[in-house]
Length: 266
Ligand SMILES: [Fe+2]
Ligand SMILES: [Fe+2]
Image 1 (tube, rainbow, N blue to C red):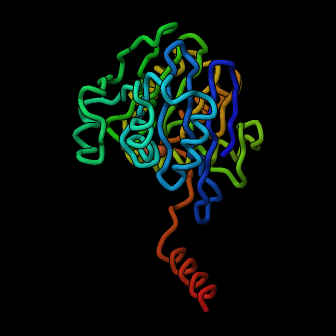
Image 2: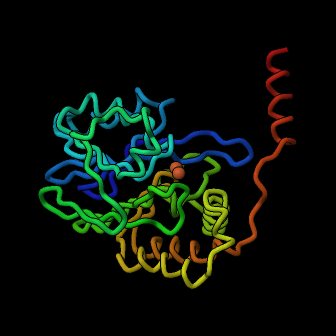
Image 3: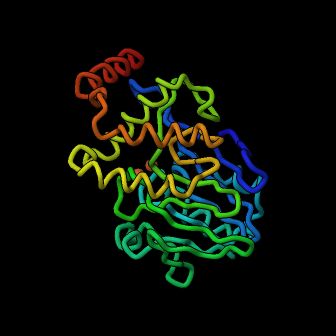
């Protein structure tokens, strides 16, 4: 886990998991140092101790006022219950369908929830935060989060890319590698991109571009800093529905993994 502070009001917690045939997948979270501090997404349960230690190294548990969950996947909710238990003044920002889909896996009672949907906004003391669904997503509950004060946009599963080795920012990437990774990730996460009317898809990308983010952070991307790189990420996303991509790992890959495990065991 690396802690990266691209803006005085923003801390990105960079974590990653190894993924067979791909390299590493970023698994990030985000802290917004607003007057009412906000933690955005909660990582995977496998990294609970590190996640909690890192969050509490930059914000005191009792100071956390909001925990914004972008959607109900396990790499975003893995430590939600643990964080809510340790942060007594926090309210979980979720939505109705997230609560329904998470069922008994969500421990926060209704009195510690606030429901915010796509297109809605909320105040955190010194700024307004806007929930804006990114153009690529794998859960119907997804909303990104745009901070009107810093211009930073949390993109959830969108604008994402795998890494050959762990990296803190996309400036470490060759641009072609970066954008090919984006296309692959987009189509794996949202295979329905092949089915959508392109004008309607582009209109969804336009919603994010209209925010004119100064930087983007997301669960599965190194930080995207500066307007030029934000624009490059947005331009690449526009091509994702029709880009050539590699097929997903299949049984032949699992056979190799099993052989390697057997070899180690022997
Ligand atoms: Fe997801
Ligand atoms: Fe995710």
